[in-house]
Image (cartoon, rainbow, N blue to C red; front, top):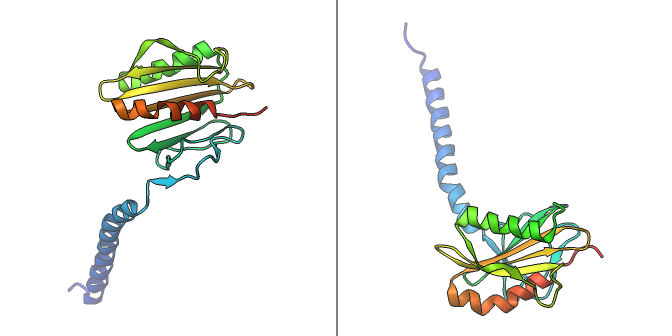
Length: 187
């Protein structure tokens, strides 16, 4: 008995179609990924909603990093890029004291990038009381940074970190501080 020729042709054509689809996906998806921008320009001075109740005004000229931004109902994060400086704003639904929230952020920075705070746990932020916010600097092997922890009236904790290289980061600290001070929550 012989092998039916029609079945072989149909099998070969289906196999080639499947192989063609796999090649199209393997080549097409990375090309599509490169074609889609990872950042989005933002209008200057317009608050960006991180959660349903918490907003922040990004620094002028900053772009939203779409790969790291995750808005949410009660918790979320926004990542802004300004030159080579990355600014992350993380809103947590955890109800912590300012001391515990600061300790948590510094521990997270130490564990994730090996950062050490410079000159202790930080001081006040842009005229806010030490009961509302704390800010400071950190250094890691590959990056320098600045951080702030805000405690909003309803107990929401907001962490702001900025990381970059030396003079570029230092030049942007006033704009970064203004961004951290602009975090607004429910009245």
